[in-house]
Structures are given as C-alpha cells and as structure tokens.
Amino acid sequence: MQLSVIIINYNVKYFLEQCLFSLRKALKNIDGEIIVIDNNSKDGSFEFFKNRFSDLNFIWNKTNFGFAKANNQALKIAKGEYILFLNPDTIVPEDCFEKCISFINSKNNHCALGIKMIDGSGNFLKESKRAFPSPATSFYKLSGFSKLFPHSKTFSKYHLGYLSENANHEVDVLAGAFMMIPKKILDKVGGFDEEFFMYGEDIDLSFRIKKAGFKNYYFAESSIVHFKGESTKKGSLNYVKIFYKAMSVFVKKHYGGKQAGLFSFFIQIAILLRAALAAASRLFRRKWKDENETRKPSGKYSILIVGNESESFKVKNLLAHHGRKNESYMRIAIQKESNLESIDILNELENILKSTAVEEIIFCEGELSFKKIIKTISQISKQINIQIFAEGSHAIIGSNHKDFAGNFIDQTVQI
Image (cartoon, rainbow, N blue to C red):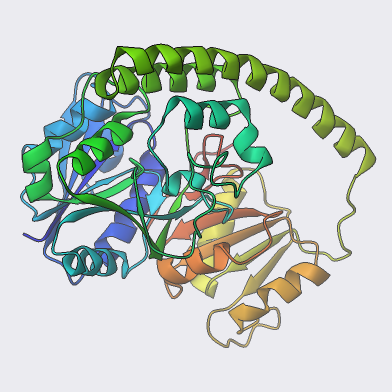
C-alpha cells in the first residue's frame, strides 16, 4: 500500500464529510487507505457515518485521547509506505497526493513534507512553514514584533516570513494539519509525543525527524484549504498561555534547563507585551470601523452560486431550511446554459464582484473540481464570505476567519 491517511475527528462531522469526498478523488490513482479515529465526538458523528463511507476504517474511541495519542493509535495499524497526518477540517485537490509523493521520491524518501495551506477565505496560513521555537523567536512571535516586521529574518523567523510562500523550501517545522512522512522515518523516530496536550506535538516530531538526519520541506506546488486554523482565538491571552506551556515542554525536552529558564523569562515579558498590544489593537479597530464604514456597490444579488442548475437547487434548499428563502441569487454556470442569469466564464468572477452587491459565494464541487475551487478562492477578494458545497454532502461549509471555528449550513430546520 502506497499511502495511509490518518484523520482525528472531534465534533466536526460536516467538515470531515467534505474532507473525505476530496480524499476519495485524491486517492483515485493511488493505492491507499483512510483511517478515521473519532475521539468520542458529541455531535452525532457516529450516527452520521455509521452507514456511509463503508470503504474507510472508522475507529470509535469511548474517550477523548487527544491528538497525539489518537494519531499513534492509528499509526499502529497503518499499512502505507507513506503516512499522512491530516486534519478533518481540510479539503485537498485531486492531484495533491501524487505531487507530494513524487516530491518525496525525488529526495530519495529522505524527507517529510508539509504543504501550502489557505484558510476558508483564501488567505495564506503562516503556520504552513515555521522555524523551531528558540527563546528569541518565540518572544518575537508572542510579543507581536513578527507582525510589525513580517519579512524580517530576525523578527519573523518563527513563520519564516522572509521565505516565499510560492516556492518550495527546506524548513524546520511541519504543521500537524498536513504532515506526509515516509513510514520508514516514523519507524526510526517514533510517532507523536503524548506528553503534549495542545500545540507542540508537530514541532516535537519535526525536531526528531531532523535530529535523526532527515529533512523537512514546505511544498508550494499544491495547496489545501484548512478551514478552522487554530481552535483557540490566536489574539487571546488564553492562546498565548497554552502556546507558552507547549513551548515550555518542547524547550525543556530538547534544549535543557538553562535554555528553558531563559525561554520562560522571555515568554513572561512577551505575554505582558501581547496583552498591551491586544488592548491597543481593539481600540484601533473600533475607531477605524467607526470612521471607515464601507458602502456596498449597487446591485440586487446577495448570494452568488458557482455551479450547475442541479447543484444550485440543492444549495437553495439548504439555505431555505435555515430561513433564507427570500435572498437574491445569481448563478455562474460552469458550462454554457440557456438560463439568462448564467455566465459561462469563471474567470469573470472578479468583474462580477466589482459591479454587483455579492455578500456570499458558494462554490459547488461536482462539475467544478476541488482543485479549481481552491485555486479560485486564493485569487478572489478576501472581503466576501466563501462557502463550499461538495457533491453528495449534507451541508454547506465555510470559515469567515482563520482564528475562529468554521460554520456550516445543514438540513436542520431553523425557526
């Protein structure tokens, strides 16, 4: 078997559903398997999947074992020559795995691979490429200096902001949302360290991969959508504290006591600076909003559906279930149709947005590929709510911001 895809699900059944649809297409030309470990979800995931995706290996834990332990649980039964640790709130393009495996092969299977990630609005996710956390790099990140100097080799080292997001690079850290690793490397270095509670597991594994003499690469020749980003609000002090705790575990494990003490000193200062910056930022955003209320362009459409007539019908039905019967729709057809409101050239999307009051775009996967959707999302305006509806799925999914939980529109009737 060539590839084992391992996914840990916890209360994101609709995101997982569309992820699985994209995986099936990405595995079309690959001998692979999909292992889903559910960590005792409370959102009805078991009932939702029990009679579906029968070709997949679902394992239903009675306890939430956490990210690291659940991944290790799946790793023990994985048969693939390559292992992909993948988040459930992702969508992959159809040719993603072939490109990734080919790249690893070109390096004689002597490397692990991360990938270019965008959020649900098409913004590049900086965690796609990272350096190991030293006291200085962590201080610059948590204090906000990395945002002030996003392309500095000194201040933006944590997210390697000085390296192009559109080129392949050797990096230190692979994001846990997408880590493709040859099984022979994992056999040598082991799986995730279960001592980490939240954050840091991917950093620790990446460190051990490099320490064993292998390399980590950021791969920019394909990209995936990662809807939710971090589940904790990144601007909050809570996130800073959780991140600090994880980094402390990492530093104590790999750098020793003296470095750990220095790290702790820097991070305490960073937490205070971050609190002050967060307060100032809230005041600035409130003032800017009051002074810069934007006016929408004139036009009658609020929702733009990109898909064929059948897909559009299903989307409208889902919206109607949520009390959105009276909204105005426009449809871009993927192929030329007789409907007067259909437009057959997808590349004209930006022109439509400039002249029409579109508040939301819903991309329908079917005639439109996942690859085309991902590419288009990364190119259009970032000021519009973007959603995706995959063929055969039970919900429309999306995410308005990388720092917050994703949203979905399902068949539940809203009153």
